[in-house]
Image (cartoon, rainbow, N blue to C red):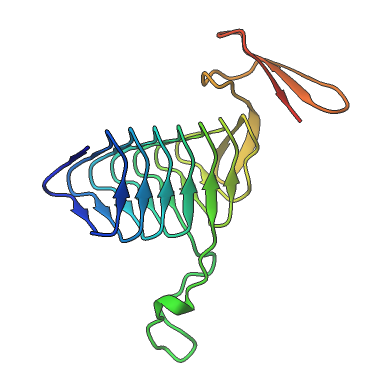
Amino acid sequence: MFIHKTAIISKDVKIGKNTKVWHLTQIRENAEIGDNCIIGKNCYIDHHVRIGDNVKIQNNSSIYYMALIEDGVFIGPHVIITNDKIPRAIDKKGNLKTEKEWKAEKTTIKNGASIGAGSILLPGLTIGRYSMIGAGSIVTKDVGDYALVYGNPAKFMGYVCKCGEKIIKAEENANEKILNCFKCKKIIKIK
């Protein structure tokens, strides 16, 4: 494990073997980070965030409370994973809200997904396995397995393979979609 001397790590954090945490990153209490991860410069990992193994989080990303990031996920630079659909600093009386008054929602990023640079994910979403979100996207809806989405708001634009290439040929029968990757020759079946 490597933690840069400028990183701020709460004493209640669990960090796995061979994980690297770079300059000026802050990791809050009760966060869990798996093995072989790279957390880039100036990232913010909120309390109770769960990050799996072999995850790469690029510089300046903010991962807020209730995020669950599974194994093998790539999070590009300047990505924000939000947690409150109705954020307010104050209550109806004008008083500063307490932590108990926040209504955080869980966001799950499934195995192998990639989130492009500068993307923002709204709360309560599930991002499917091996999906890909294009740079600068605003994600407002769940993203399916192997789906390619991008834009503001992000829209479905096709499928990608595990290797990351866009699927050119997709077939569909009554029960499943069959994706054929021209690059790695993998055939993927989605139900």
